[in-house]
Image (cartoon, rainbow, N blue to C red):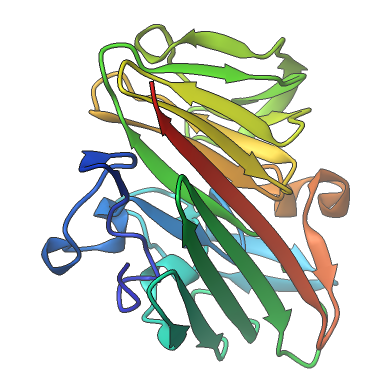
Length: 267
């Protein structure tokens, strides 16, 4: 774990075998290269770095190469503080005062609990501003591709993106049950009951979350793939009814919470 690099997980191993894309903590160069990082106060793309909220226009800043959108919020690129830790758990906090990347103040808290065969991560965001703000959250775990990496996920719908990655229309998706080698997704999905089964020739895993949307990213030219529990549709802030697509209108002092867990066992 690296608190200074966005409270990211540097690596996760099972009997010496990488469960997630893993780097020894001292060798990790950035949160983007980590095993997993938190998404707050929104996930995925915020369209063209601007949005309108409660009658006011706001802008954000570039934070992801030359992407025309802001991506994954701000928490993954900021240093966090370690509030508590022991051999099996750690709690990290981040205080955002409002800046050019996100105009509203908030506090984020992330707790990691490791037990035999399972990692559980909890994330909360509390509104520290004096007005309501739109909030979403999630995680971005990276799994290493192996020769028989496979997903089994129940779903009902897939959001099709435009050329810049913003979702444009929802189409039926009767789940995913296939080898990673045969998939080419960079989509947000709906109708996820909160469980994804992940398997390869070495490990079998179950990813669970109370968040009800899922982003699946299976780049064919990369040695990893991603299965990301999130609380809202990508770019929901620009949809006609953002709250109907998972964003939360968080009043001053209110808190929104999410969790995910990853069970791991050898094949």
